[in-house]
Length: 164
Image (cartoon, rainbow, N blue to C red):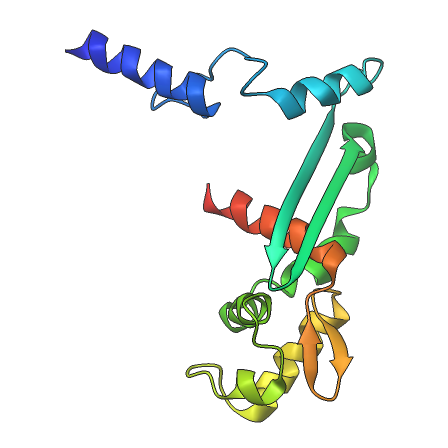
């Protein structure tokens, strides 16, 4: 029974490219790791490695296609403390809820204020300003907010990584 379970876990790992319960990773497969293979082909001389995140997202009537790549040297060489404001803006449940609501189609301050559990109007404006200052929201004028297109995929990547 244990052997069958291990074999099944290995098959699932090979299909999804995810870790198995015991922590081993499936061997690279061109079909599963097509983006990774493409990255390696484009950066063969980068000895420390690189990372790539990409996405195609349909938000309301807008299709967003983004791709970001960085060498590991770039990421490790950055001043991470400079990112604290951008990341800390996401570190509040109300702000995360606001971002989800704006992505879901609620763009007006009045629409957002009507949502239960977001606090007072003053608190709502405080959170909106924090998100805007960090670049996660942009004022579209007349009390309307949008998540800038260039921030949608990075936001979703951060959230997906946090789920792990």
